[in-house]
Image (cartoon, rainbow, N blue to C red; front, top):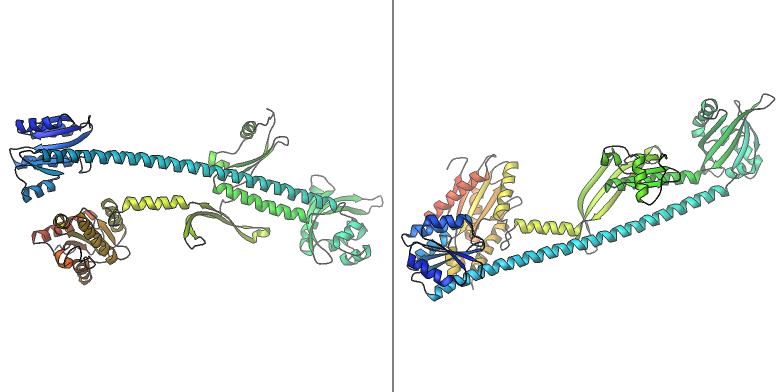
Length: 607
């Protein structure tokens, strides 16, 4: 153990020399002949400090003072401290342990006593080496988990790319199918009608007859009343006529119109058609409309589906806060899906598209201007949800997911109610988070809240809730004697029995805390001074050890007892520190009066 330091504090030069002689081959020995020198050495916090040996012979007070100096700077786990005494009487041993001694050694020194110190130091160093090894192992495990997550993410990205490629292929196939259907129906319907009040049909072709599902031209004329008004679905007629005359007089190409409307076939089926018309006046002065109509029902369906698909794409990209681009360099067009403005605080520019194209290996010309269609965020103004939830698997076990969705209206006149959502696999992350939270908040032996987490939980309830409240401090009487008489396993069993009873007694909203080695706290909501509190105290006092095995301790309910100090208040506004101080004082009074009892301090009444 070369390189480790041992501080020897002794006012006796002979004792210091004897201890230094024994330890100097194994450790770097630093000596202090006064309490002040000893404190100075501690304040210097020597590197690799392994133990302190305290042997101030002037008074026991100096030894205890030195121990308190050590424990003000180091815990038992961080630094062993050995107190040298003149005799090993029980009161000296207990006082030494209470002051923070790891062990007590009787003067004059024996080889056995010095070996105890050496073995304790070695055990301390071995424990720290083991902790360091465990930390390295945990770090390696964390890195392995991270690498696994990276691999899993790569697989997800590959699968996403495959799905996107499959979706693109299907979209291309759908587009090809629509084109084939469109071509098969060419040349569509051709007709001419008078541009007057009656709008009488003059000429019709076979394509129009087939479009309406009629047997022949005569059947078509009869079905439509031989009028343009009979061709257009009644619900669309007024808007269609208004649009035709508006375009004829004020459209981009005077005398021409282009519009869409619905027709009703003879079999009752509704179809969408696109109307290309031209207004012509013949030499006789008669005004005519020459019209070509094409069946665009499939096109309308495709557009609606494409709109739904685009909405879906926009919503999903916004959920993941991603941006997607569809750029045609030759056509100089670009579509942007996602909230570019929200991400970068400005609109997307031609320079942005050109830079992305170059990164993709496509050349653009300096003078080219890209026609950019930036799709507005689909989720803007719509009801969105982003929450953690569980879904049972085949065995009924809850599996954690993160559910993100957007609900909105869609379709003609926003008549279709839709939502688009996705479930993200967060089960392993949530389980790790819950496990880490439990480990951080709970005492490993008893399952109760640890001191830090318990104080935080109680303080939170006090800040938010209304009274009454009660705080019970429960101390296991003579716990050290239990350990010394029956062994530490029996002592641990006693702790577990008390903790188990407290947790069974606690109601929803109550808090059970292991405050120290043999001390528990129980915080009660909605319970103040009175009969209910007395009943709970009585239950704890008489039933905490009811299930303790008799083969471990004979008559455990008589042998094992508890001291309980209680602070209660009827009003809100009390702090944890106030309750703690009162309950601790009450417990102290119980201990002074002989233990195995309880005292209640009512803060509201001041007694």
